[in-house]
Amino acid sequence: MNTQKPQAITVRQFSFISLLLLLMLMLNGCSSLKHTNFEPVSVNHVAQAQHWELKGKIAVRSNTDKFSTNLYWFHQAQGDDLRLTTMIGTNLLVLDSGPQGATLTANGETYFDKDPQTLLDSMVSIHIPLDRLPLWITGQASSEDKVISYNADGTIKQLISEQTASHWQVDFRSWQILQGIQIPRQIIIVRDDVQIKIQNNQWQAMQPIQ
Picture 1 (spheres, rainbow, N blue to C red):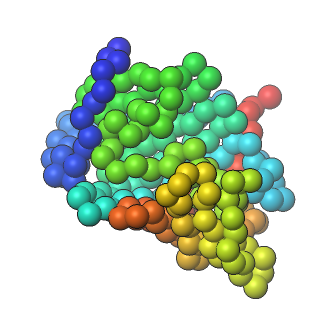
Picture 2: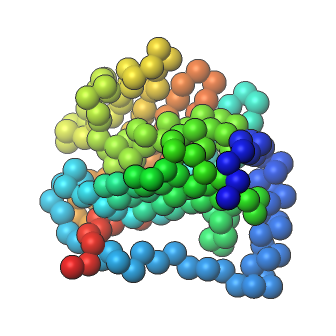
């Protein structure tokens, strides 16, 4: 397994990789995503879901780079399976993390680091706040986040992360009802010249099969 730092992907590389993987898919078929040791579960509030599955889109841009892909995220209490994919579901980047560390697969290479944020930063030229996203994309704020405003129904409208000197601003543009609970439909995360837009198309709370 490769432990060296991978070079960051630019938008041109994403376009080339998408075309290459499409050709590979036509020849070999596409592998499916199945977490067979988990099953859907109903919850009364999103905070009750220790494990969940999300499918949507992510668009990231800065003054120097930008990219847009489909997003698949299987979140567990002790780790994550995060994938950036083409519109037909072929993996561009796969980040798996757990108690023992994290692996990142892209460009046919697999890399390892104890910290998943370090791995992602080394591959994607725009910083994405990986540790905060599970809360933000499910409409929650951490103890280090300051909620600026709420919607009339009590959902968060805007917050600011006070974790670093250069604060992230999170705008919850729209909300929706999925599996009987309120979940953000679209959020926009901004800091300095970086903008991250995430659209949540499907969300499901999960539990381990007993």
